[in-house]
Length: 505
Image 1 (cartoon, rainbow, N blue to C red):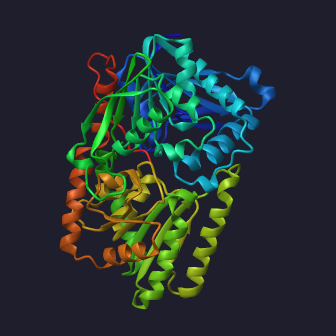
Image 2 (image 1 turned 120 degrees about the horizontal axis):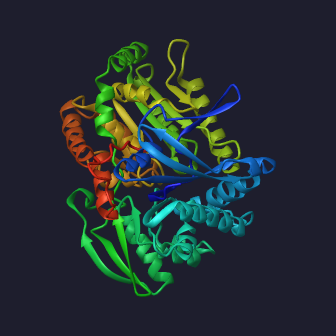
Image 3 (image 1 turned 180 degrees about the horizontal axis):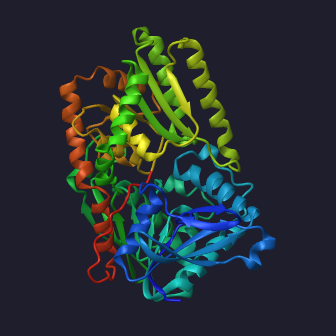
């Protein structure tokens, strides 16, 4: 089988697996929106690509399991190497170690950190399996692009097996400062693995600077170069701003490049959806159902980092403080329920549902309910219609690596005005400084932010939205793709176009 000059290592499979009449088929995602289509789009720029993922397979079926499948879809032809993990391995590697130990530290929730059930040997073993699969697929001198914190140890194992390949790593999460990260007992092993990379990438300069500070607290690392951050990412007074960004560091005679460049929204795709007849009809239907009410949307999932509980409490206070809004405002919240195996999120989902029920019971009537809570995702093409109708988009996580919902809302608004209420602890806040930035840890700040959004004159709404749209359009997903290709110095296929990427959520 032909070896690949770009190997993407990510825990999810790059297709929808469907069983019909006993036959398994691999369907391309119906929407080009999402991190998986974004990454797949890079296959269009290289001669041959491969994807490494895991799939849960019963131990008794693993001997007959087809490890490598050949996929052909609109992104081209590429190999998918699937690691057959048992249910016990998935729980240990992903549900426990990744979500109960690593996730809370990355998001500054040390009180949620749970060390006791971690089986670090199992985590190492799964990372080693990913590295071996990547090594088997990679051509001589290939780029292997590893994604996210649950695969932190892959670079260490991969470079030992295949010292000829170039290894890049991209973090989709925040990266904390040394005082937080160093809570992890495996901190030196993790940093040592990341320092085996040729390139380590982050969404924003603050995360890059925190990583370098952490590495220097543990290892003999030198800063070779740091540069002023471009104007769009340097607003003063924003919690995650940084005046300079490290771009090159040295360790044990090697140079590691550090990159800080936020993923963009797929602006052309969103614009295309906005122009469709079905979107127009959906808008009409939504506005009919609203019956003149002002409309707020908030899109997220069931996770204590997303701040949904605090946002709902703010909404409850709003209706208490401003009773004139009763019957005249509607809030749509998506809080997508976590995987059944994710015990750590059960409590927050229960709290969200209880608060939502209390709000509707306290303020609602037979003819009007202030809040609609959905625990499943809205398809993206339908979501765009909701963005188009929403007077306010309310995105206030307690901590978030980037948050593309905010950018997608801005892209969908065109010349309609609207207000974006955005937590200053999202990576997107350093780009979208014309949003109403707020501190989600402060009830007073949250109250002031939603009041300001509701009371903002249309002229100011349009001016702020236009400024944000210029940023979102300039730094869209195509811009991110071009940047990544340049940073990787990929051997681009003859006559290949820069991939049309989609915005992950």
